[in-house]
Image (tube, rainbow over all chains, first blue to last red; front, side, top):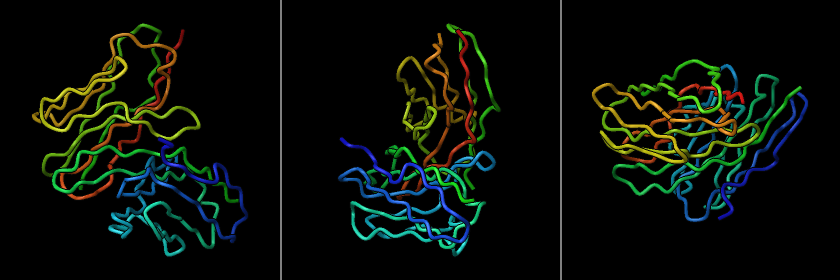
Length: 117
Length: 113
């Protein structure tokens, strides 16, 4: 089991540039989550997908953020244009959601550390 | 809305000491409860979970019991090791649907030899 794979591990970019973060969930998982981690706010859920469909994007901070899941094995989180306050660690997680009472854990990738200068 | 409250850190202990990290939650319905651990530079790893009242989750010497009457899920370990130094997150997942986890702010644990 390869686990959730995120790329790149580190990204340094200048303010105003477009940033794309990538995630490959665990094969067979049907739910995918994007989280952001900062010292000030801790872990924040940005958006999640179920069966490739965005379910709740209320955590996306601004219109500069967008996420897609074109198929079951790939998702992207894009920031355009990026700003210094977007600097954080972005985590992708996946799980198997079976409906009803859902007690499946989330499996996290190692994250992408984004620095916007 | 749902929320998770953890004790503030950092928590510094000597090796072989007894550990308790407090966690309380607010949620509608009957959530599942989790403890995750994060080592430096890594993602979060599931440590243990409990899915209903009075369930006890356990793993690697850590334990936590789902207490519905006190809405708590405190993490304990009888004898900590230096390798337990990490950040620990308490989290809940609401029953039903495919909602994500709601996390506490994390507790940084430092174990000194």
